[in-house]
Amino acid sequence: MASLDKPPVTTSTVKWRFPAVHPEGHKYVAIAAGFTLLLTVVSHVLFWPMVGVVIWVATFFRDPIRTTPQGEGLIVAPADGLITMIQRVPIPRELAGVNGLGDAPLVRVSIFMSVFDVHINRTPIAGTIRQVVYISGKFLNADLDKASDENERQHFVVEDRHGMRVGFTQIAGLVARRILGFVKAGDMVAAGQRIGLIRFGSRVDVYLPDHVVPQVCLGQRSIAGETVLGRVGGVPVGGIAQ
Image (tube, rainbow, N blue to C red; front, side, top):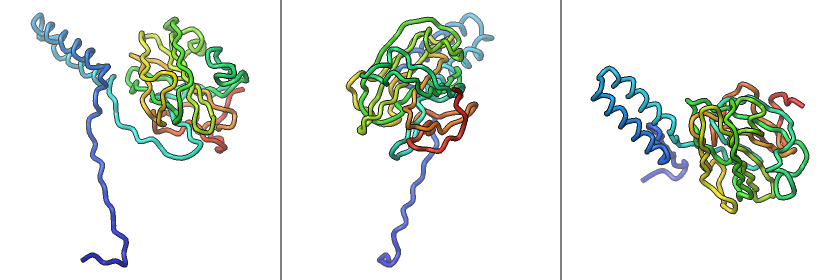
């Protein structure tokens, strides 16, 4: 019989596993595999390079499990990638107004995703999706500032139970040619929930409310659904370009 004067010890283990391939990527993996088999008939020399292409395509669409930090006032990163800009800017017209983020400039945190990053995007806070606005456009280098206004993009506004609204934007890049969304206006989402993906290289901008302090620095790498991007009433950790 176990002693009652000591609390029970709970143990758990987590095992690493290969990330699953998102269903959106299955057809692309199949197409790459089909080309590999076809080219093998033509030339055995091309087999191994094409196997590498198949592996890369599967890796691009990988969908790893993420553990989202819990707590009030946290805004998590919606994308994997490099923090390339932290800057106070005017709000895009699609996100402005009383039904969006207002009209005053807000701090924008930009995350650049290379073709080697995970491209599944996640919502930065829990709440209700208030807006989803898709804009067709150009395919400039996603690292350029003007890509926010000229490239193909998709805007989201999510509002939490306290009425705080956070806007974020998927932006296509040089190689990207399609933005996909998994949610629509009116949907309830959990923090870190998958909301869409961008194919083959891109960027995500996040617009932080004025009472939210950035918790990342330029040059830092973020992990979607895990990295704390901002905190209500937090202590600044990096500079903000005015």
